[in-house]
Image 1 (cartoon, rainbow, N blue to C red):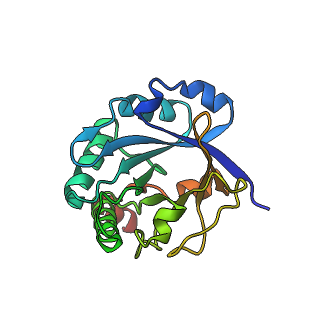
Image 2: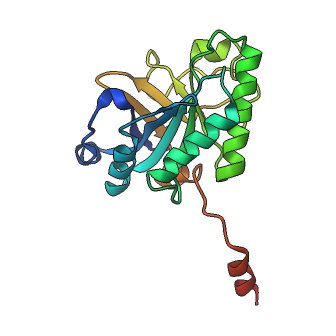
Length: 212
């Protein structure tokens, strides 16, 4: 039976987070909000990113999607915010928070999400995790995202036993509680979790040197 890693996710609503205390309490991974739409940057993100890193917590950054906007513009802003906070290192995770339709039909929401993920993957080399909740996914807002790891918000389900909405057939992260802050589990090891994250791209020169 696989062990479960425990994690949290935070945003500006939490204010100053004591990352050392969370690490001491067994938090192994975390996601911090970086951006929302095309204009909002979480003022606590840089502090959170640094705090996670300094306390040996697997670092995750997420973008809150606004599907009426330009997905590529939102992707650029998100990645730029992460870069200014210190950038990506081996195993860091990226996620799209997909929970509002902005009054768009599901097909347009899903099209936005796919385009945003494609832009992030192309620029950063990381396949984003998709955060969503059950009823939103059931409406079809996540169509075509089955190749991305699912981070499902299902606080009414037993920890580690969420329902799995289409188009997925398995879950990766389960947000099982919102009290007193959002709590999550990952079924697996730290190495398995970081395998979903950033991998530094090898330089062509280094590859040539090694092959000589």
